[in-house]
Length: 102
Image (cartoon, rainbow, N blue to C red; front, side, top):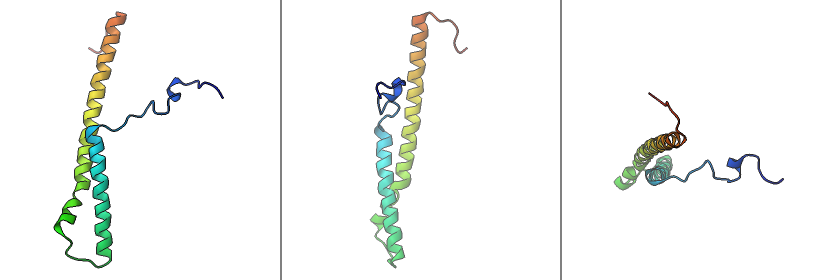
């Protein structure tokens, strides 16, 4: 069909960024915690009681990972907002634009 009319669609991952730092760690911990919760539920369904402490503590990775992921998202959003503000300020200075937020 030829070249795309929309430049942002020419690169498949133009709008997507890979998770960085705390977001990736939080997602991994969350998934591990969910798997352990599923294992615990399956064990209880089969009649197992008095599960080992390490198994119950590992299930706590789900909420911990969720919290770490949320913190990472907030930090990334703040840094993105600050970077956008710097780009706009630099563009306004270079074009000689007056005004802005007051």
